[in-house]
Structures are given as structure tokens and as C-alpha cells.
Image (cartoon, rainbow, N blue to C red; front, side):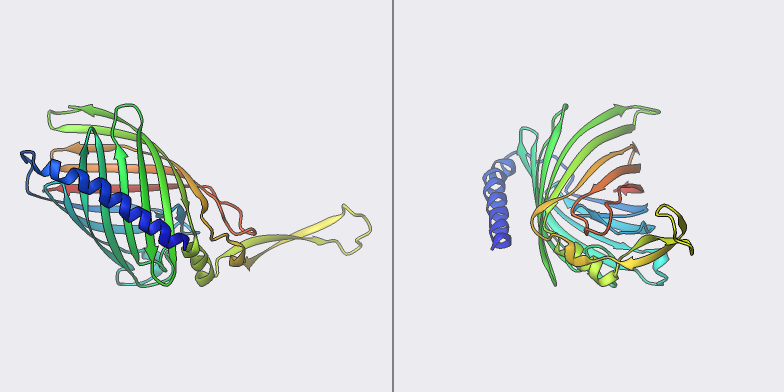
Length: 296
């Protein structure tokens, strides 16, 4: 009931706000380029989905192609390959379509749908191949807030809310007249249901390390401990709370250097997960990535 109510509210808000402004925007003279593409390749040590990451850091390579029409209609195609999975083919591919809305006064919104085909259950969101999403943002020179809402579904269903505050430092003409340097700083708070994460822990039998102290043979003194033994045990996935709650907090930054149509962007974020299994400690981690992109 809650998921259906959330989905209805998401759709109504998006349609009301975006329909109200789209005719006003279409009435203006359009001077933008009709078609544009961006090809990119991204690599990193982990990926974040709805505030959750894969338990172990795994190197990935992700080529992608983005198409936009008059800065409104857009389509995306991407695929991912994880070398450590010991497979010769790709591990997933995704296709998406949506629309960006310029609401005026530095306000923007988007509405989209993405389908992802997974070839294994080793990825944290493998049980939710479909996603409906919308976002709202206000761009300003001090603090730019944005709200992201999504509904994912497949063998299980989840809702997600992301609240982000960001500030960007921009510098033009660093080495020549056609280059630019951008350094965005952001903090993101994630809320949602976590059926997808519970399914991930269950299907992959996520383990934890357990250290046990072996008492010495004489055992006469209470504090007379012997050696320690480290073993692995399967995490109890039933302790994961799947209700709507705080799921993660992230602090991130990147350095994007653009010259003409080429951009290079290294990124780093510090992830603090919440709502972990009771017998699995919250593993704070640093996520790094690097992207090279070309627009045409």
C-alpha cells in the first residue's frame, strides 16, 4: 500500500509540475543544437545503488552512450564488465529514456525509465531491473539542493529518496580559451526500503569474519587466554530492516577538466551505510572512479 501511494505521488508531482512549464518553454525561441551525443568510459572500485554498495570492492569498466534532443528528450545505453567475475562477456547492460524539463529561475526536473539486464546476482541491485525515477533541482551559486525519487521493481519492489546539497567551484580558461575546471562538493542522504539489499545478501551468502579466543589447556585463570582463530560465517539476512528508513550518507567531490569536447573526471566519495544486518558491522568505505567522456 505504501509503495503504491509513493508511486502515485511521484507520478502526480512530476506530471503536474512538468506539464505546467513545458508549454511556456516550448513557446520560447529554441537556439540549442537539435541533437547531441556523449560517449564515455568509467572505471572504479565499486558502485552505489540506492545508498547501498556491493559488500566487496570490485573493479568495473563501464562504457556508455548518452543522446539528447534539444536538452529535453534523452536516451542512455551502457554496459558493465567486472574482470574479477572471470567471465568473457558483459555482466549487465542498461537502456534508459527520459525527459529533462527547464522550469525557469534555475529550476529543473527530469522524468525517466531505465531497464537493466543482469547476468548474475552478484550486483547489489540485480533483483530490481526496472526503475522509474524523477528529480527536482535548484541551481544557485551558494548551495544547490536536489531531490531524487525512484521506484524500482522486478522480483522485489523498493522506493528510494535521495536528498543532495552541493556547491561547485568553477574556473574558466585554465590553460587555454576553451578549457574549464569544475570541482563540485556534495553531501547526499539516502532513504528507502531495502528489499533489494536483503535479496542481495541472501543470494550471495555474504559472510563475515569471526575471531574466537581459544583458552589454554590449563584454563586455571580467567584471563589466561590462548591463541585466536578467525573463521567466516554467513550473515543473517533476516535481521535487515526492509521498511522505509535511512540507508546511507555520502560525502563526495570530483575534479572535472573539460577542454573543447573532451572531459576527464576523477571522483571520490566517502560512504557511510546504515540499516546493515545486525551481525555485519557498517563498513564505511571510500569509493573512487574515473571517467573520460567525449561530446559530439
